[in-house]
Image 1 (spheres, helix red, strand yellow):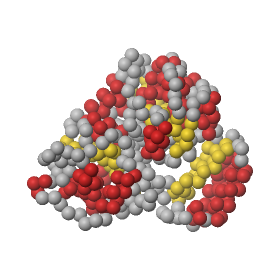
Image 2: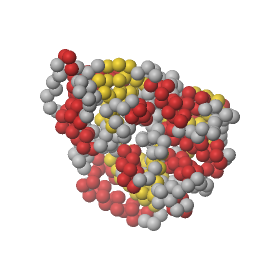
Image 3: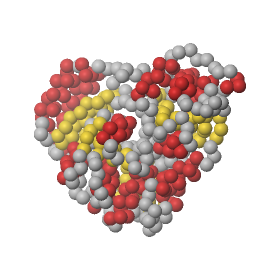
Length: 450
Protein backbone atom coordinates (compact mmCIF):
# COMPACT_ATOMS: atom_id res chain seq x y z
CA UNK A 1 0.00 0.00 0.00
CA UNK A 2 1.37 3.42 -0.98
CA UNK A 3 1.44 5.81 1.99
CA UNK A 4 1.80 9.54 1.58
CA UNK A 5 1.86 10.53 5.24
CA UNK A 6 1.74 7.46 7.50
CA UNK A 7 4.90 5.48 8.20
CA UNK A 8 5.25 2.29 10.22
CA UNK A 9 4.27 4.14 13.39
CA UNK A 10 1.98 7.00 12.46
CA UNK A 11 3.04 10.37 11.05
CA UNK A 12 6.44 11.63 12.14
CA UNK A 13 8.96 14.33 11.21
CA UNK A 14 10.79 17.50 12.14
CA UNK A 15 8.63 20.04 13.95
CA UNK A 16 7.84 23.01 11.72
CA UNK A 17 8.48 21.05 8.54
CA UNK A 18 5.80 19.19 6.63
CA UNK A 19 3.96 17.22 7.81
CA UNK A 20 4.54 18.21 11.46
CA UNK A 21 3.03 21.68 11.20
CA UNK A 22 -0.02 23.08 13.02
CA UNK A 23 -2.12 23.37 9.88
CA UNK A 24 -1.43 19.80 8.76
CA UNK A 25 -2.03 18.34 12.21
CA UNK A 26 -5.34 20.18 12.44
CA UNK A 27 -6.35 18.70 9.08
CA UNK A 28 -5.16 15.29 10.28
CA UNK A 29 -7.41 15.58 13.34
CA UNK A 30 -10.33 16.67 11.17
CA UNK A 31 -9.75 13.80 8.70
CA UNK A 32 -9.46 11.24 11.48
CA UNK A 33 -12.61 12.64 13.05
CA UNK A 34 -14.57 12.35 9.81
CA UNK A 35 -13.44 8.75 9.33
CA UNK A 36 -14.38 7.89 12.92
CA UNK A 37 -17.78 9.54 12.48
CA UNK A 38 -18.37 7.42 9.42
CA UNK A 39 -17.49 4.24 11.31
CA UNK A 40 -19.05 5.00 14.69
CA UNK A 41 -22.14 3.17 15.85
CA UNK A 42 -23.42 5.56 18.47
CA UNK A 43 -26.76 6.13 20.15
CA UNK A 44 -28.82 9.06 18.85
CA UNK A 45 -27.35 12.37 19.99
CA UNK A 46 -23.97 10.91 20.96
CA UNK A 47 -20.70 11.95 19.41
CA UNK A 48 -17.58 9.80 19.08
CA UNK A 49 -14.91 10.54 21.69
CA UNK A 50 -11.14 10.21 21.36
CA UNK A 51 -8.33 10.46 23.88
CA UNK A 52 -5.19 12.52 23.27
CA UNK A 53 -1.97 11.95 25.22
CA UNK A 54 1.55 13.21 24.62
CA UNK A 55 5.14 12.94 25.77
CA UNK A 56 7.16 15.81 27.25
CA UNK A 57 8.31 17.62 24.09
CA UNK A 58 7.72 21.36 24.05
CA UNK A 59 6.01 21.04 20.66
CA UNK A 60 3.37 18.77 22.20
CA UNK A 61 1.37 21.76 23.42
CA UNK A 62 1.11 23.21 19.92
CA UNK A 63 0.22 19.91 18.27
CA UNK A 64 -2.27 19.01 20.99
CA UNK A 65 -4.17 22.26 20.36
CA UNK A 66 -4.14 21.69 16.61
CA UNK A 67 -5.46 18.13 16.95
CA UNK A 68 -8.15 19.25 19.38
CA UNK A 69 -9.30 21.92 16.93
CA UNK A 70 -9.45 19.45 14.05
CA UNK A 71 -11.47 16.88 15.98
CA UNK A 72 -13.82 19.55 17.32
CA UNK A 73 -14.44 20.88 13.78
CA UNK A 74 -15.39 17.33 12.74
CA UNK A 75 -17.82 17.00 15.64
CA UNK A 76 -15.73 14.63 17.78
CA UNK A 77 -15.31 15.02 21.55
CA UNK A 78 -11.78 15.01 22.97
CA UNK A 79 -10.44 13.72 26.30
CA UNK A 80 -7.06 15.22 27.25
CA UNK A 81 -4.65 13.45 29.60
CA UNK A 82 -1.40 15.41 29.19
CA UNK A 83 2.03 13.74 29.37
CA UNK A 84 1.53 9.99 29.67
CA UNK A 85 3.16 6.86 28.14
CA UNK A 86 2.04 5.67 24.73
CA UNK A 87 0.81 2.32 26.14
CA UNK A 88 -1.24 4.23 28.73
CA UNK A 89 -3.19 5.83 25.88
CA UNK A 90 -3.86 2.37 24.44
CA UNK A 91 -5.08 1.13 27.83
CA UNK A 92 -7.24 4.17 28.65
CA UNK A 93 -8.84 4.22 25.20
CA UNK A 94 -10.01 0.65 25.73
CA UNK A 95 -10.93 1.09 29.42
CA UNK A 96 -13.00 4.22 28.77
CA UNK A 97 -14.71 2.68 25.71
CA UNK A 98 -13.56 5.51 23.42
CA UNK A 99 -13.42 5.36 19.63
CA UNK A 100 -9.69 6.03 19.28
CA UNK A 101 -6.56 7.07 21.14
CA UNK A 102 -4.01 9.50 19.77
CA UNK A 103 -0.43 9.92 20.97
CA UNK A 104 1.68 12.99 20.23
CA UNK A 105 5.22 11.61 20.33
CA UNK A 106 8.30 10.83 18.27
CA UNK A 107 9.21 8.00 20.65
CA UNK A 108 13.01 7.70 20.92
CA UNK A 109 13.78 10.63 18.56
CA UNK A 110 15.24 13.98 19.75
CA UNK A 111 13.01 16.79 21.00
CA UNK A 112 12.94 18.61 17.66
CA UNK A 113 11.03 15.74 16.07
CA UNK A 114 7.45 14.85 16.86
CA UNK A 115 4.67 12.68 15.50
CA UNK A 116 1.09 11.50 15.73
CA UNK A 117 0.09 7.86 16.15
CA UNK A 118 -3.30 6.29 16.60
CA UNK A 119 -4.83 3.43 18.57
CA UNK A 120 -8.14 1.78 17.81
CA UNK A 121 -10.97 1.34 20.32
CA UNK A 122 -9.47 -2.08 21.13
CA UNK A 123 -6.10 -0.58 22.09
CA UNK A 124 -4.30 -1.74 18.92
CA UNK A 125 -2.55 0.27 16.22
CA UNK A 126 -5.02 1.37 13.55
CA UNK A 127 -5.49 -1.12 10.68
CA UNK A 128 -3.94 -0.16 7.35
CA UNK A 129 -7.32 0.39 5.71
CA UNK A 130 -8.35 2.95 8.35
CA UNK A 131 -5.05 4.81 7.98
CA UNK A 132 -5.59 4.77 4.22
CA UNK A 133 -9.08 6.26 4.66
CA UNK A 134 -7.64 9.03 6.85
CA UNK A 135 -4.94 9.77 4.25
CA UNK A 136 -7.55 10.08 1.50
CA UNK A 137 -9.54 12.52 3.63
CA UNK A 138 -6.59 14.74 4.61
CA UNK A 139 -6.21 16.33 1.19
CA UNK A 140 -9.91 17.03 0.81
CA UNK A 141 -11.28 20.48 1.75
CA UNK A 142 -11.66 21.01 5.50
CA UNK A 143 -15.06 22.20 6.65
CA UNK A 144 -16.68 22.62 10.03
CA UNK A 145 -19.84 21.15 11.51
CA UNK A 146 -22.55 23.58 12.73
CA UNK A 147 -21.71 25.37 15.99
CA UNK A 148 -24.17 23.25 17.99
CA UNK A 149 -22.46 20.05 16.77
CA UNK A 150 -18.86 20.99 17.56
CA UNK A 151 -16.88 18.52 19.63
CA UNK A 152 -16.24 19.31 23.29
CA UNK A 153 -12.97 18.90 25.19
CA UNK A 154 -12.46 17.76 28.77
CA UNK A 155 -9.48 16.75 30.87
CA UNK A 156 -9.28 13.35 32.61
CA UNK A 157 -7.65 14.22 35.92
CA UNK A 158 -7.06 10.67 37.19
CA UNK A 159 -5.52 9.22 34.00
CA UNK A 160 -2.07 8.63 35.52
CA UNK A 161 -3.50 6.94 38.59
CA UNK A 162 -5.66 4.65 36.47
CA UNK A 163 -2.65 3.62 34.40
CA UNK A 164 -0.43 3.03 37.45
CA UNK A 165 -3.02 0.66 38.90
CA UNK A 166 -3.31 -1.13 35.56
CA UNK A 167 0.46 -1.70 35.41
CA UNK A 168 0.48 -3.07 38.95
CA UNK A 169 -2.35 -5.44 38.05
CA UNK A 170 -0.07 -7.19 35.52
CA UNK A 171 2.27 -8.28 38.35
CA UNK A 172 1.34 -11.44 40.30
CA UNK A 173 -0.73 -10.69 43.41
CA UNK A 174 1.32 -13.04 45.57
CA UNK A 175 4.64 -11.34 44.76
CA UNK A 176 6.19 -7.97 45.58
CA UNK A 177 9.42 -6.07 45.02
CA UNK A 178 10.41 -5.56 48.66
CA UNK A 179 14.14 -5.66 49.23
CA UNK A 180 15.02 -4.58 45.70
CA UNK A 181 16.75 -1.31 44.90
CA UNK A 182 15.91 -0.29 41.34
CA UNK A 183 17.19 2.65 39.29
CA UNK A 184 14.43 3.87 36.96
CA UNK A 185 15.47 5.94 33.93
CA UNK A 186 12.51 7.72 32.35
CA UNK A 187 14.48 9.43 29.53
CA UNK A 188 13.01 12.78 30.67
CA UNK A 189 9.94 11.47 28.89
CA UNK A 190 6.33 10.46 29.31
CA UNK A 191 6.82 7.94 32.14
CA UNK A 192 8.39 10.35 34.61
CA UNK A 193 5.17 10.54 36.64
CA UNK A 194 4.15 6.89 36.33
CA UNK A 195 6.99 4.34 36.17
CA UNK A 196 8.74 5.24 39.46
CA UNK A 197 5.40 5.06 41.29
CA UNK A 198 4.58 1.63 39.83
CA UNK A 199 7.79 0.03 41.12
CA UNK A 200 7.69 1.93 44.43
CA UNK A 201 4.09 0.93 45.17
CA UNK A 202 5.04 -2.71 44.61
CA UNK A 203 7.65 -2.37 47.36
CA UNK A 204 10.94 -1.48 45.67
CA UNK A 205 13.33 1.24 46.76
CA UNK A 206 13.56 3.60 43.79
CA UNK A 207 16.33 5.83 42.48
CA UNK A 208 15.04 8.11 39.71
CA UNK A 209 17.13 9.43 36.84
CA UNK A 210 15.98 11.06 33.61
CA UNK A 211 12.87 12.28 35.41
CA UNK A 212 13.16 16.07 35.09
CA UNK A 213 11.79 16.97 31.64
CA UNK A 214 12.10 20.54 30.43
CA UNK A 215 10.57 20.11 26.99
CA UNK A 216 13.95 19.92 25.25
CA UNK A 217 15.85 17.10 27.00
CA UNK A 218 13.75 14.04 26.11
CA UNK A 219 16.01 11.07 25.19
CA UNK A 220 19.06 13.32 25.57
CA UNK A 221 21.72 11.13 27.20
CA UNK A 222 19.16 9.09 29.10
CA UNK A 223 16.68 6.30 28.46
CA UNK A 224 16.58 3.04 26.54
CA UNK A 225 18.47 4.47 23.56
CA UNK A 226 21.23 5.94 25.77
CA UNK A 227 21.67 3.31 28.49
CA UNK A 228 25.15 4.39 29.65
CA UNK A 229 23.63 6.69 32.28
CA UNK A 230 21.61 3.80 33.71
CA UNK A 231 24.62 1.46 33.85
CA UNK A 232 26.60 4.11 35.72
CA UNK A 233 23.75 4.90 38.11
CA UNK A 234 23.18 1.24 39.03
CA UNK A 235 26.84 0.86 39.98
CA UNK A 236 27.02 4.24 41.75
CA UNK A 237 23.96 3.51 43.92
CA UNK A 238 24.70 -0.16 44.52
CA UNK A 239 21.33 -1.04 43.03
CA UNK A 240 20.08 -4.52 42.26
CA UNK A 241 18.64 -3.61 38.87
CA UNK A 242 18.11 -0.77 36.44
CA UNK A 243 15.14 -0.11 34.17
CA UNK A 244 15.41 2.23 31.17
CA UNK A 245 12.42 3.39 29.16
CA UNK A 246 12.43 5.56 26.06
CA UNK A 247 10.69 8.90 25.56
CA UNK A 248 7.18 7.48 25.20
CA UNK A 249 7.86 4.45 27.46
CA UNK A 250 7.05 1.63 25.06
CA UNK A 251 10.68 0.39 24.92
CA UNK A 252 12.67 -1.32 27.66
CA UNK A 253 16.32 -2.05 28.44
CA UNK A 254 17.48 -3.43 31.79
CA UNK A 255 20.76 -3.54 33.72
CA UNK A 256 21.85 -5.97 36.42
CA UNK A 257 23.84 -5.24 39.59
CA UNK A 258 27.12 -5.66 37.68
CA UNK A 259 26.16 -2.93 35.20
CA UNK A 260 25.53 -5.47 32.44
CA UNK A 261 22.98 -4.29 29.86
CA UNK A 262 20.19 -6.55 28.54
CA UNK A 263 18.33 -5.73 25.32
CA UNK A 264 14.86 -6.60 24.05
CA UNK A 265 15.84 -10.00 22.64
CA UNK A 266 17.33 -11.10 25.96
CA UNK A 267 14.47 -9.77 28.07
CA UNK A 268 11.89 -11.38 25.79
CA UNK A 269 13.68 -14.71 26.17
CA UNK A 270 13.78 -14.33 29.96
CA UNK A 271 10.01 -13.80 30.06
CA UNK A 272 9.23 -16.64 27.63
CA UNK A 273 11.56 -19.11 29.33
CA UNK A 274 9.94 -18.37 32.69
CA UNK A 275 6.41 -18.67 31.31
CA UNK A 276 7.32 -21.92 29.54
CA UNK A 277 8.18 -23.44 32.91
CA UNK A 278 4.53 -22.93 33.94
CA UNK A 279 2.90 -24.18 30.75
CA UNK A 280 3.14 -24.41 27.00
CA UNK A 281 4.22 -21.34 25.02
CA UNK A 282 2.76 -21.67 21.53
CA UNK A 283 5.36 -19.53 19.81
CA UNK A 284 7.29 -16.27 19.69
CA UNK A 285 7.35 -13.56 17.01
CA UNK A 286 10.44 -11.47 16.41
CA UNK A 287 11.47 -9.29 13.49
CA UNK A 288 14.05 -9.27 10.73
CA UNK A 289 16.38 -7.61 13.25
CA UNK A 290 15.97 -10.23 16.00
CA UNK A 291 19.27 -11.84 16.92
CA UNK A 292 19.75 -15.30 15.42
CA UNK A 293 20.87 -16.60 18.82
CA UNK A 294 17.36 -16.05 20.21
CA UNK A 295 15.86 -18.13 17.42
CA UNK A 296 18.35 -20.92 18.13
CA UNK A 297 17.76 -20.76 21.91
CA UNK A 298 13.99 -21.01 21.47
CA UNK A 299 14.44 -24.01 19.19
CA UNK A 300 16.36 -25.79 21.96
CA UNK A 301 13.31 -25.55 24.25
CA UNK A 302 10.91 -26.50 21.45
CA UNK A 303 9.27 -23.08 21.03
CA UNK A 304 8.44 -22.07 17.43
CA UNK A 305 9.74 -18.73 16.19
CA UNK A 306 8.65 -16.50 13.30
CA UNK A 307 9.95 -13.20 11.93
CA UNK A 308 7.72 -10.25 11.06
CA UNK A 309 8.65 -7.00 9.33
CA UNK A 310 10.35 -4.45 11.57
CA UNK A 311 7.82 -2.49 13.64
CA UNK A 312 5.83 -3.54 16.67
CA UNK A 313 2.55 -3.24 14.73
CA UNK A 314 3.69 -6.04 12.43
CA UNK A 315 4.73 -8.19 15.38
CA UNK A 316 1.27 -7.71 16.89
CA UNK A 317 -0.44 -8.55 13.59
CA UNK A 318 1.51 -11.81 13.27
CA UNK A 319 0.80 -12.71 16.91
CA UNK A 320 -2.93 -12.26 16.29
CA UNK A 321 -2.76 -14.25 13.05
CA UNK A 322 -1.04 -17.18 14.78
CA UNK A 323 -2.86 -16.99 18.09
CA UNK A 324 0.42 -16.48 19.98
CA UNK A 325 1.09 -14.20 22.98
CA UNK A 326 4.79 -13.30 23.08
CA UNK A 327 6.82 -11.20 20.69
CA UNK A 328 9.11 -8.24 20.42
CA UNK A 329 12.06 -6.39 18.94
CA UNK A 330 15.67 -6.16 20.04
CA UNK A 331 15.14 -2.39 20.43
CA UNK A 332 13.02 -3.14 23.48
CA UNK A 333 9.43 -3.33 22.25
CA UNK A 334 8.15 -6.41 24.10
CA UNK A 335 4.66 -7.86 23.62
CA UNK A 336 2.88 -9.97 26.24
CA UNK A 337 -0.65 -9.94 24.87
CA UNK A 338 -2.11 -11.63 27.95
CA UNK A 339 -1.08 -8.48 29.86
CA UNK A 340 -1.52 -5.62 27.36
CA UNK A 341 -2.58 -5.03 23.77
CA UNK A 342 0.60 -3.18 22.85
CA UNK A 343 4.28 -2.89 23.75
CA UNK A 344 4.70 -1.38 27.22
CA UNK A 345 8.13 -0.85 28.79
CA UNK A 346 6.82 -0.72 32.35
CA UNK A 347 4.63 -3.80 31.98
CA UNK A 348 7.44 -5.71 30.27
CA UNK A 349 9.82 -4.83 33.12
CA UNK A 350 7.26 -6.17 35.60
CA UNK A 351 7.12 -9.48 33.70
CA UNK A 352 10.92 -9.78 33.93
CA UNK A 353 10.79 -8.89 37.63
CA UNK A 354 8.09 -11.49 38.22
CA UNK A 355 10.31 -14.10 36.56
CA UNK A 356 13.20 -13.03 38.80
CA UNK A 357 11.08 -13.28 41.94
CA UNK A 358 9.76 -16.71 40.99
CA UNK A 359 13.21 -18.09 40.16
CA UNK A 360 15.00 -16.32 43.02
CA UNK A 361 17.84 -15.76 40.55
CA UNK A 362 19.36 -12.92 38.57
CA UNK A 363 19.04 -11.74 34.98
CA UNK A 364 22.03 -13.71 33.79
CA UNK A 365 20.68 -16.98 35.18
CA UNK A 366 17.24 -16.28 33.68
CA UNK A 367 18.81 -16.36 30.22
CA UNK A 368 19.92 -19.95 30.70
CA UNK A 369 23.01 -19.70 28.55
CA UNK A 370 21.66 -17.45 25.79
CA UNK A 371 24.58 -15.52 24.29
CA UNK A 372 23.71 -13.12 21.51
CA UNK A 373 25.73 -13.26 18.32
CA UNK A 374 27.73 -10.14 17.46
CA UNK A 375 25.53 -7.79 15.46
CA UNK A 376 26.62 -4.56 13.82
CA UNK A 377 24.02 -1.99 12.77
CA UNK A 378 25.08 1.08 10.77
CA UNK A 379 22.57 3.79 9.89
CA UNK A 380 23.40 5.43 6.57
CA UNK A 381 21.60 8.74 5.80
CA UNK A 382 19.77 8.72 2.47
CA UNK A 383 17.44 11.05 0.63
CA UNK A 384 13.82 10.10 1.22
CA UNK A 385 12.68 7.86 -1.62
CA UNK A 386 16.20 6.85 -2.67
CA UNK A 387 15.72 3.68 -4.81
CA UNK A 388 18.37 1.58 -3.08
CA UNK A 389 16.62 -1.67 -4.02
CA UNK A 390 17.17 -0.87 -7.72
CA UNK A 391 20.79 0.24 -7.36
CA UNK A 392 22.98 -2.42 -9.00
CA UNK A 393 26.09 -1.40 -7.04
CA UNK A 394 24.34 -1.80 -3.69
CA UNK A 395 22.69 -5.06 -4.68
CA UNK A 396 26.00 -6.45 -5.94
CA UNK A 397 27.72 -5.55 -2.65
CA UNK A 398 24.85 -7.11 -0.72
CA UNK A 399 25.20 -10.40 -2.63
CA UNK A 400 28.94 -10.37 -2.05
CA UNK A 401 28.57 -9.93 1.72
CA UNK A 402 25.85 -12.58 1.86
CA UNK A 403 28.27 -14.94 0.14
CA UNK A 404 30.99 -14.19 2.70
CA UNK A 405 28.60 -14.74 5.62
CA UNK A 406 26.85 -17.81 4.19
CA UNK A 407 26.22 -20.36 6.91
CA UNK A 408 27.80 -18.13 9.58
CA UNK A 409 25.38 -15.24 9.88
CA UNK A 410 22.78 -12.91 8.36
CA UNK A 411 22.83 -9.70 6.32
CA UNK A 412 19.97 -7.21 6.11
CA UNK A 413 19.36 -3.88 4.38
CA UNK A 414 16.24 -2.04 5.52
CA UNK A 415 14.92 1.48 5.06
CA UNK A 416 13.78 3.08 8.31
CA UNK A 417 10.06 3.67 8.51
CA UNK A 418 10.47 6.81 10.62
CA UNK A 419 13.75 8.46 9.53
CA UNK A 420 15.61 9.04 6.21
CA UNK A 421 18.05 6.22 6.93
CA UNK A 422 19.05 2.92 5.36
CA UNK A 423 19.87 0.43 8.09
CA UNK A 424 22.77 -1.91 7.33
CA UNK A 425 22.84 -4.93 9.63
CA UNK A 426 25.30 -7.81 9.68
CA UNK A 427 25.22 -10.58 12.27
CA UNK A 428 27.38 -13.66 12.80
CA UNK A 429 29.51 -15.71 15.13
CA UNK A 430 32.81 -13.86 14.45
CA UNK A 431 32.75 -10.23 15.63
CA UNK A 432 35.66 -9.09 13.45
CA UNK A 433 34.10 -10.58 10.33
CA UNK A 434 30.75 -8.99 11.20
CA UNK A 435 32.28 -5.52 11.69
CA UNK A 436 34.30 -5.67 8.48
CA UNK A 437 31.32 -6.86 6.42
CA UNK A 438 29.00 -4.17 7.84
CA UNK A 439 31.51 -1.37 7.23
CA UNK A 440 32.16 -2.56 3.66
CA UNK A 441 28.47 -2.64 2.83
CA UNK A 442 27.75 0.69 4.55
CA UNK A 443 30.57 2.34 2.58
CA UNK A 444 29.05 1.16 -0.72
CA UNK A 445 25.60 2.42 0.31
CA UNK A 446 27.04 5.76 1.43
CA UNK A 447 28.84 6.27 -1.88
CA UNK A 448 25.82 5.24 -3.94
CA UNK A 449 23.50 7.54 -2.02
CA UNK A 450 25.78 10.60 -2.15
